Image (cartoon, rainbow, N blue to C red; front, side, top):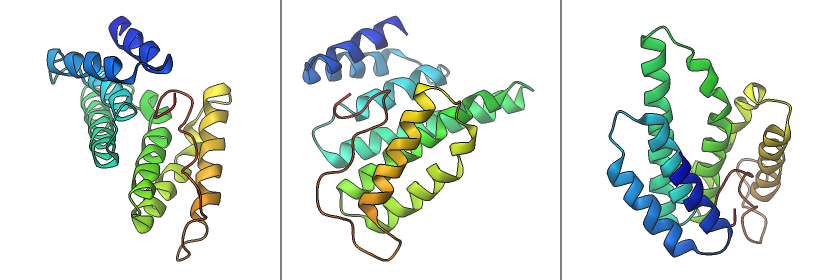
Length: 164
């Protein structure tokens, strides 16, 4: 996790390309059994992408790893519920990805999933940031059936993304 954190710091400092290169290398080194690491790497890798379709694919990988980890922990009698704090952010990122691609229906679907999971968030800075980002994206998207408001997508949740 230290090397992931170092790559994230590079990204936040503005070195997107080097951060992406390091995260790709970590992805290659991390085995399929290290699901939490794979979820984290994919999540941050998504935010380093220049192509919105590539960003969507990395965010999908992050969600898939989180779901696999939840299933694994549940099967082992562990506490899969600990991961519930990840899901609102993961679905929010997918909603923003779809919105950036002009896929408004898919964006609304993922935003609805994020909203449905907000109750699992802690009442701390992270939870507040994700809740605020959900509200910002909801404002941009407008009601279901209406087109999005003009302008760029709202910023990502505080733990990562294009600008963070």
